[in-house]
Image (cartoon, rainbow, N blue to C red; front, side, top):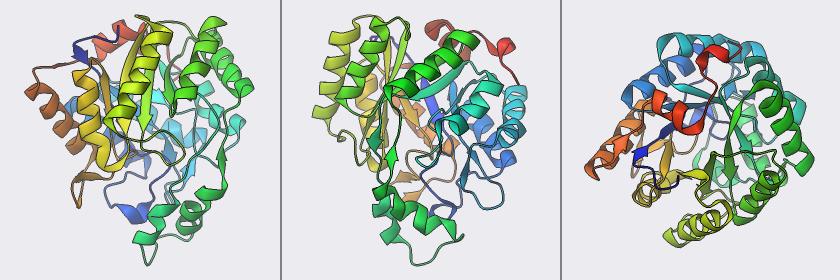
Length: 311
């Protein structure tokens, strides 16, 4: 399965790392999140990965009502596969992170395969002033926070969302050990093929973002999962497009979006998520690779369908 020639483009539209000060394009309100999600789908993204923000000041929020202000809007306006985070942010408890997914019962959710340092404090030095009071402490404080996902947390998510609601998962692997953790849950039959494995590079606390790192992760995944998985490449910041392109050449899928990088080129902020999707699509098509549609993604990943979600 890792050698599929229809490439899935995932777009992660807002995330929980970047703050409003860092880019005027970062979507904050439910309307902005919905509009940018639909535009990303129209540009070629078959999967939309979603976090929520407090519309008053842009801070990450697990609030179910906020999610429900944009999930139905996106579903009504495009046919993208909606993928809701179970990671939330480094500051959220598991029960908070699961609140919206359990109510929304989406086709797909992200699932981090381990607890880790997840540091982005280095970004604070770029800004002399901040739009909202919470931002600076949030960014700097990332160097003293553990992003928790224990084995028990992972099992809870697999059972409560997967077994009880038919949600499937984008398994987020920030380092080689996370692949072995996923293999453990496959062995226990809690994680079931076809697996959709997001290989993540360039996060401080995880594996680096070099071609050698990608090769090592891919070779390890091949050994552990054989033909029972699709892989995708997420590379942070300036590595976003080149490493994803390398992954696509190797038979994988790609993820872009303002969650992972605020830029469209060296020193140039992206105007929107759709701009990044369009650039990634152009790169892929220049390599004679075809772009997967949402319907094709649902077939590839054996998703339950948009008629069986809770929104």
